[in-house]
Image (cartoon, rainbow, N blue to C red; front, side, top):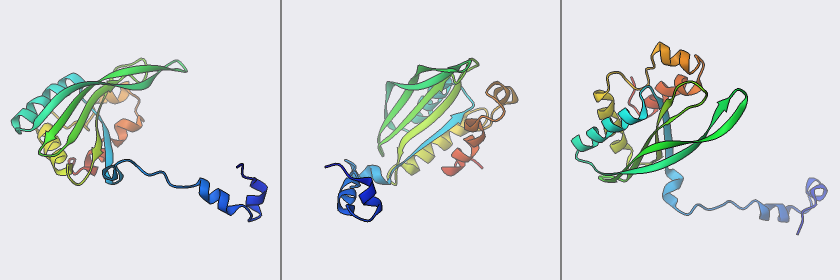
Length: 176
């Protein structure tokens, strides 16, 4: 039954409008309390993924390395083109379920910009994520949120992903 907006403005037909605005229930209640985390990293994805594999082996974490893809858009002149990034996905089964994605995008015609993403963080796996990321940062030659001057110039001095990288790592309690 269509809703007459003029009646809704006058106060009539409120029952029909309230019926239309029912909240959508999520399939899994666990997803309600989970958050996602994403940050730009100052290293390329293949070397970061290799280092992540060494860290996970060193921590004796039960994980499986999977292949995945992520779509993004690349800007040529003024036109965005759809592109696909190869994702290094680490699917950790125990001690807590956790997924870590590492990938690179080419936002414009200049070089790649690496990202690390954890799609679902909740109370059961946040401490494991912190432990893994702290061990990863210790093995890197410099913190992943510190970009070189050349990288900053290459990706624009005001790139929001680069500017927010330190605060993203700080939100997990990793950065100083």
